[in-house]
Length: 296
Image (cartoon, rainbow, N blue to C red):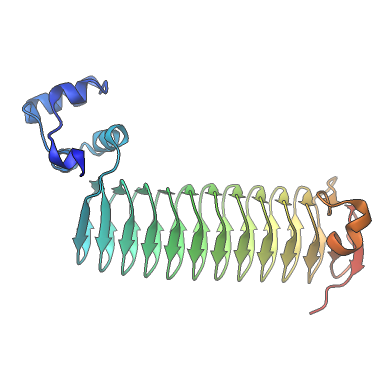
């Protein structure tokens, strides 16, 4: 049973959470006799108090409620449960759910997309601001954010991934085309792109990095396992891999920085597990076994 959908949120219940004075005065004026949890969230959003609605959701958490509609067009929505939309989701500002968000079509938000669990769209996912997803993020087309993108699980996008902020993934990333990120990239597991990977800061993966095209970063390039590029592998900082480095083109680190393969492999195993393959031998190769050009 969903307790918050069964009982009203009372004045004392809210006061115990130490709300801001202005928000508490609004509650007393409009809901002094208490209110259903979701009704109160809806009323706050309707009154333009979206931040207060988000605070309330932070305090009382998600519910098991489900909002199922054909399509969703709103200025903003804060829903404590799961949003299930058969068509598109379009919001001028915020879309936030305590649990999951799913759309048969595309998702577009003006300022932020926030979900406690998975976000899935049959089409594209676009937030002109940030996106914060507690579970997996899956898009049948591409994913685009105007700010930071944080994903607690895996990310899958059939097309491009374009992030104009920091990209942080706790799981794996599987992107059908290019990955382009304005800030640092941190991937807890593996990062895979059918096209190229371009980062304006450090690119780091806990496991491996694989790109069908070039890998380019304005700072360091790091992976706990190996790194493989179908084109060039170029960093303005250091290149570090726990195992092998493979590129069809050149492998090049920034001026004054080194290239390190086999950092997590015994030196006796470098010839099999820390191979460095590229069009030409890198000038700054500091560790690993040079193996010549990669086979096509």
